Every structure is written in structure tokens, then in C-alpha cells.
Image 1 (cartoon, helix red, strand yellow):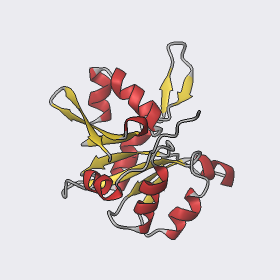
Image 2 (cartoon, one colour; image 1 turned 90 degrees about the vertical axis):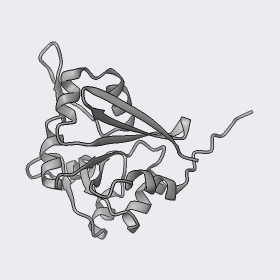
Image 3 (cartoon, one colour; image 1 turned 180 degrees about the vertical axis):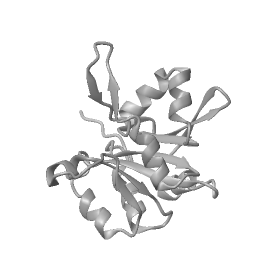
Image 4 (cartoon, helix red, strand yellow; image 1 turned 135 degrees about the vertical axis):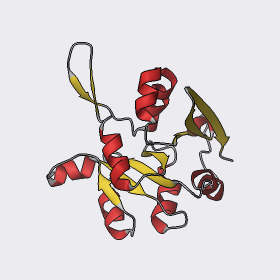
Length: 181
């Protein structure tokens, strides 16, 4: 017998959590490789967005690149993202006071990592599964760098039906699990 897990969430509750601090901007970092229709949705939206990768990208790379999008609480794009992205590992959320240009500049610093062997690898921090593991193992220097221009990172934990919010207060990371009933 198969059991199906209900992964539906309350969208209004989700919005309240993401947009609860009026002095902050809410961004999504969306993985184009996970969302086949992302380019069309971005083009049709009235949102500010920018690719995290730099330079001229061919059409294939544009399709799989990560995008930083400034969200608007009740827009069609935001509702589409919240309704369809949950439990599909499409994105993480970022809260910041900074402009999209400054947030992009900051987040670009984390697109690659260098292994102990000196190999440079792509670091897909915008995948909620990777962000979850990274946040649980981050050291003090890494958290200082990561939260330099960011107030909070949020990512899904769909099997527990929760949105995880991570903030840095003083030198401590504060994790808050918000039930998404």
C-alpha cells in the first residue's frame, strides 16, 4: 500500500512569513534548471530580476541559470512561485535591506567553492536541500560572510511542512521553523 504525503500549504500564511518585515525587501533565488517555464514567467512578470551568473549567456545556459527576483506580496508571479515551487526545490528566499543590484553582488560571491584539492565547483546554495545542509554545518567565518548584507535566509522543509528561517544575531545563527499548515 502506498501512502501519499499532502504537501499543500496555506499560501496566505506563507506570504505573511515572507513579507512580515516591512522595512525589508523579499527576494527569491530561483534555480532555472528546476523550473522549465521560468524564463517565460519572468518575462511576463513586472518584477525586477537578474541572473546571478555574469556575462552573455547562450540560450541553453539562460534556461538553467539561477535568478534573483524581487518579490511583490500579491503579484501573480509570487503566487505562482509559492503555489508551484513548494516541495519542488525551486528556490530559497532572502530578506535584505539592500537593492537587487547589491544583493546580486553579494550572492555571486557564493556561486563557487574550492575543494581541499584546489578544484573549483559550482555551489548551488539556492537549492533548498543544499542550503539546509550548509546552514547546519556553517562555521563562524562562513556565516559572517554569508549574512554580511542579508537579514534572513528562508528555505522549505516540505516533509515537515515547515519553512525554515535563519537569521544571524550577534555571532549566533537563529533557526526558526514555521509550520505551514
